[in-house]
Amino acid sequence: MTDHTTHDGHGTHSNASQSDEVAKIAKLVKDFRFAMLTTIEGSGSLVAHPLTIQEAEFDGDLWFLIQKDSTTVRNLGADSRAGVSLSSNDSWVSLSGTAGLVDAPEKLRELWNPAAEAWFPDGPEDPNVGVLKFSASGAEYWDSPGGRIATAFSFIKSKVSGEPLEGDNGKVEL
Image (cartoon, rainbow, N blue to C red):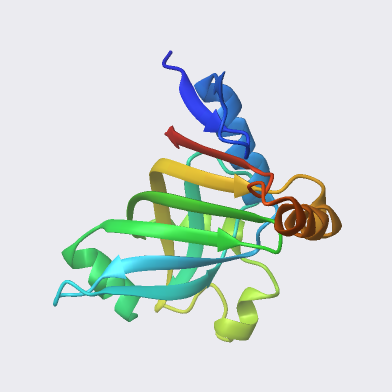
């Protein structure tokens, strides 16, 4: 197992095992409902698409319900490389990997929920509803432990003291 370096927000480093880093990312991802999935267009331009995360447990894969005829699916058909960005007021996660439409009717039924009907009123039987699987190969996170108030306090403390903002940052290969 390879050790990965994390930053504690003060410019110092500590070693953490890969499983600790993956657990940290899984914990952070669990708190997000929406994601921006970035794909590559035919011209080489990057384009981000907002999607709703369909599964709360992150094991390296994220699942989305999507229209099969969408630009996102078309872009991924030509180049499966993708990125996912997740953000809140006090934590951020960036994932890199690949994504694509999967033929998984059982997964579609498993992921289906009442909120999906707002986007897909014809239900899970709609032939244009598909399952998009994102498989992460790497991740980076930034976390300000303690929530919004602690983040605001750390920001003010940083401005007054001139010291770097406190937080947790790490990178891991998945």
